[in-house]
Amino acid sequence: MKFELYKDVKAFYGKTYDVLMRHEAQNLIPLGNIIIGNEGKDKTAWRDSADWFMAVITDETGIRLTAIMTPPWNITLYATDNKIDDQALSCLIQGIKDNGITVPGVITEISLAKRFAEAFSVAMGIKFTIHKNMRQYELKKVNPEIPVIGTLRLAEDKDMAFLPFWIEGFQHDCFGHPLVPKEDPEPYHYQIGKERLYILEVNGMPVSIASKNREMQSVCGVSQVYTPPYFRGKGYATSCVAALSRIILGMGFTKCVLYTDLDNPTSNSIYQKIGYVPICDSLEIKFEPG
Image (cartoon, rainbow, N blue to C red; front, top):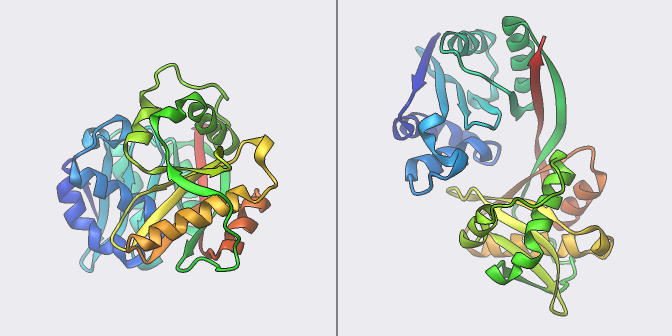
């Protein structure tokens, strides 16, 4: 087994793209990242590949394990063809140790996440905790029986009166972040400017939001689905995601992909009603000092 560390994202893209594409929907995160890095058009925050950790483990047959981490986010792994090799994991962990890389956590397919976390925690003398149980879904066709409620439109600067509160509401519900908008409005303007954030309006009133992200060859992600508490229970999130999914499919993508928290039965039920089907269970695991 050989550990290969990359500093040039374009070289890493060339090395790993075809391998990751074997499970395009499952590899939404790493593929989305290397596409962003390869294009080099956006170097704001974590999107600047200068600080990324990129590595592959190879043997005589080719790539056995791919790893990418975009600080401050967790490392993401892919075992080629989902065939987990403990020798490849050990080689990766040794490479991480030798290069003094700090890994806050891992987010990847459930079996690989567990195997990596167990081996990494022993090698590093640290503890790990399962932070979130997730399920990945894909959709090829929206259920035609989903009722159309309101209209979906792109977010605009005029929405800044409420949008920061809704975005932080999503971050609070999903990740436990403080429910306080940032003083710097630039992150919110960034999302608006990228034309990926959509707002569902009912009778002219904004009631729900969702984003499209990580546009790949045939797959596009859906994320940041949020409805304020006072608008919930009215089918707005269902309509919002269904409408955005139709837009994505209408753009020529063959699949929409999203993650859900398995501890949230409401969202899992909503997405399945729309037409999303499970394709992969994942874990987000956090590391902490032993």
